[in-house]
Length: 365
Image (cartoon, rainbow, N blue to C red; front, side, top):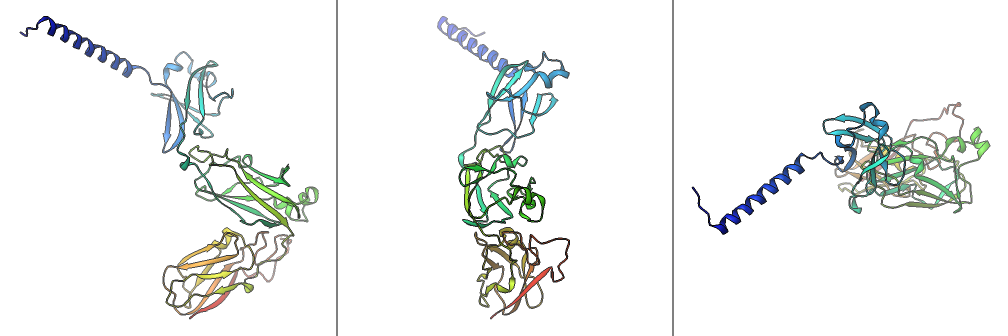
């Protein structure tokens, strides 16, 4: 038997009361249904989980109509898919949630909870790495732009985020081909100006004229409301200013290129001067190099921003002898003219002089 004096009895009773009170509160919090929560996949908010306590009074076949997720202060429900699990209803939006924004859960048209998708640091926001062609003067029959991002971007509805403004006042409509072409990583978009308006013998050109007009100033604007695949917005709006000059109606000619050969026994870069701006992406992917034995020379091609010079960095030291550049005929200039034909040519007429592969031989000493 344990005997306690009055003071010790009082202290012991208080201690027991505190322990009991703490235990009761802890169990109550543990057993309460969870609040609305966010389901994450890496750094991306992919779904909202609504626990049963918010919809227990709703017939299961009416949940989709009576339980809604809305962007805060918008009044409009977000489109998505509902699935029932032991944790509650999982709502996955068709378009990913946006970091930094608040969302509201409505039951029977009454808001029951608001949640916020927390922002990542500014350093984590996607950025535009480059836009090609990187020139301040472009031909009237320019065929396409390449937009390169630092992170994979959300696809679909890209034309809501990209605008072409003429002479600082007119936002042009129907100038882009309504087709999204992305690389497999989702980091580069090929943005085509409407070929039907560029080719002069087609009805779109005759009815609407070319997308660009000689002598005018333009601004390609990429809005910062574009989300990456994690729901982060672009770091900032990105404007590209350029002036439009005369049409380019001459195909590139590899015979005019100036090849600056490196020295044998070195790992110096091979330099190829095109004497004009070529399609940046194609120039890095359509030129290869063979040694005197016909074997591929391992290394990497890189093209400068204006698209006028290509550099080849070898993996090994150069051996003396003859080398051969092999250039696929699909290599184009900025107007889509390739090594075999003009973009504005009649495709029904086959070019008898088409080569497929063009070659240039040079020597390393």
